Length: 307
Length: 285
Image (tube, rainbow over all chains, first blue to last red; front, side, top):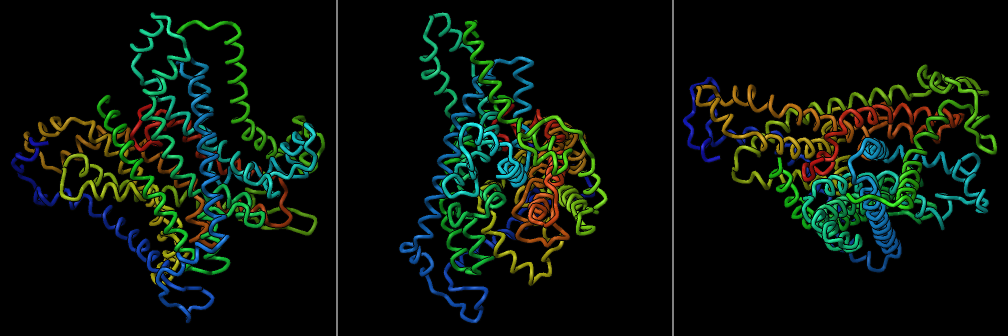
């Protein structure tokens, strides 16, 4: 980079000083950036206000009241519980399943490559549409999954429309959509591992469980961490699948952060509470994303180094 | 890789079969359903043997649905048109804004460059509603409510970070010496960017554009909050579709098939770049 800095500017009709050039180039992106930061700060202001769309005249600052109220608000604790449960369940199951599939497909062969490409398809379907697909398959009157459930003795299994199984159903859809994400990142990770340790272990006749836990897993850890954090960040704010499937219902079974904030804003028109919920969610994701970015940067550096 | 015992071979094959069935069956089943009438869909036990009909697709494409109660208008084709327009325009805007910025971030370490790049990246992980809900009010003041311009602007939230970070990686891969040599020969900065950097990063830019298109197409929440029926893309339109009266299940399935086909086709076409794109350039496929 030093070389370009010392370069004398060649004669040209374009006279932007060297120092200004990068700013000029990134200015448009910067403006979009600012355009998005403004609503963010507005949301912070809302969260400190008593503000209902139905009573605009009563709008006033109530300082931390929206937040303080959360402590005694069972609906908030339900939101926190369901969000954490959803994120925990989906990410854990997707990680285990994704790692398993990646290991099955690790060896490069025509069949394995074909399967790994096929498995990408659910990931490329809009989550909201994926939820609709599963809604059709779990319909009580004609859904194939309802039929299959009845075959194994689960008559009148209500899937997303029963409070007992609603969480399980949306988690299943999430697994269907996002396991391939973890799978392809880990598969790329597995295939990029150096071969020498494995060859050495094979020569020494080291048991395979030992190879897996002492060589594969530690070397794969940065990939696992990145994939997990990526998913955790998305999963804790899941909206599309849950909203398209049940609108947060039945009752308040699935009112995760963003669904609850959406319903607060548009149905109960309680802007203040809605904004406060989103700020709390943002604080969670911001903390997580800082951990994530550190990991991601390390992997990125490694990927660029290999290029 | 060591050799496998026959038992292990069988177990692996079985596991892979289960995996393929789980992930492929829903697509297969909805595809079949889209060629069925309510009569065969509602049959018990469900059967994969039926005489296929194109009536569901015909109803969607003509926008006219014959029911016992009369003719019903379906706006699905306009949803499809909105999806195409919004995604293409958003990606085009993202490329125009993002590629020069990506070049600046890759080539010049300037004051605040990393801060801007990371702020943009953090948008990828911020709760979208946090920005969308206040935006509903700003859009009313600005007259952007339910306009394509407003939507395309918001779509930059997903497209721009993707383009910026992936394309930045491709620019970083190009040796600065190549550009230096060209500039020594007396070419301007702009000519160097156009003749050297852009063509070399071309495949990467194309891949980033395709991915941004897929993400824009699959987005649901932006249009749900900011668009009325006439501007809605397929993701939101299909949901409204489910609750409208007189709709046949086969038509919902056909609408889903039409809505997912473009992204699936693009994904298969660009699968080589998916790993890199999905990890924002952190993992190479």
